[in-house]
Image (cartoon, rainbow over all chains, first blue to last red; front, side, top):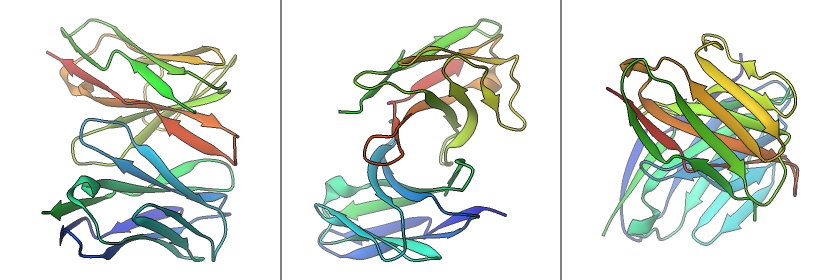
Length: 109
Length: 116
């Protein structure tokens, strides 16, 4: 069964404290893995797409990596404005997207 | 580029009325759009896939007669919640699929529906 699991459910960090969010997946025929950021009351904002194991992408303080079983979203020296829910989604072979439940990230000043 | 808009951003209606939500891709054409709903503190739940010029494909458990989807052009899809009831209150989000730089979905800002 295709499945995406994100951990932890919630993460509280001090400003400047680096950490990682995890997205584990089992899917038949991975076509792509997507990371999104969602602020309360808004639609998700696209961050990254990863297509194959070993691929990495960076944007400001965020870096996404991919293996055959999981993806990590590393956040380096986070700031309060990085607080949001981070969603991971996997696109399976037939095109359907399977979503994780998200990780709520809170950065305290 | 790749901006998706939704209208309205929020709507309050009485039970039994119908509500139409528009989803537009502003600077690209999208043959495929998706409609999601999101309950508080939960992840997105796909309701249906909307393909331009053909009938929408609904996910299991989603009533197609209650949630009418029309994708009449390459830049516009509409979701009509018919005879809305309080349990339909939710955050509805659309997304549009583009093949630019690899398959990628861009999301609209969402529509908050409250049914009294």
